[in-house]
Image 1 (tube, rainbow, N blue to C red):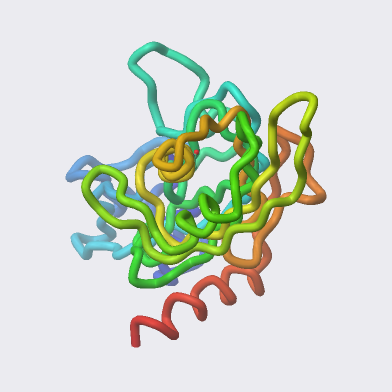
Image 2 (tube, helix red, strand yellow):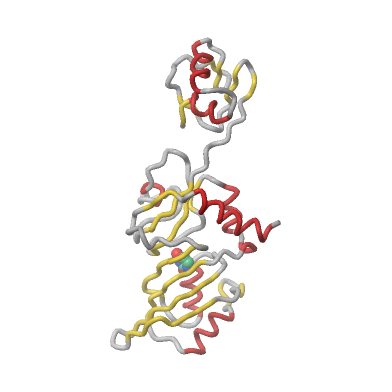
Length: 242
Ligand code: URA
């Protein structure tokens, strides 16, 4: 919800001050009802008219990047009333995550109210790179990791080529750290990929989404993307869709 003055002035119809005058004169209606209170708020989806003319308003687009902490769900609401990633961001506009990270996965997550960009970024055709660091139980062989990079079958579909790098081995603890770069975003993809070669993922972190990382953000911290970053994201996806 936003003040009517703001919504109308954003549309370019007239200034905020002028809207206030029009409200006083009873010329502004929301869904057919004349506005009488100066502080009245409306939704961008409401039908706002001035002298019977519809105001075509577009909500201002906002873009955030958060370092998602563990133990937070990514969807916009939860039937079990658990905290969602949306609750962590102080933003009145209805924003939603670009794709999903599991409850126990940490790292880079984008949130926005820009549906067009969201759809472009999550479309597999657009090949957005996602870099994950997985701590797995056991120590995989070179051959097993090669299998992952060539593609494995999960849920009846073969995953596309991935870049896989063994970063660290902890022999006494029997765990390894593996870097995985993929372009798709199937449900639980990384965990299922490792499962397919016989390994359980103990911890999972997304370190990069396209060119964006959260190196300067602690878990739970977030920031707005700069205009330059948003333009860069658009140019990445437009290049491949044009
Ligand atoms: N792959 C997974 O298995 N989980 C995530 O959260 C992201 C990618």
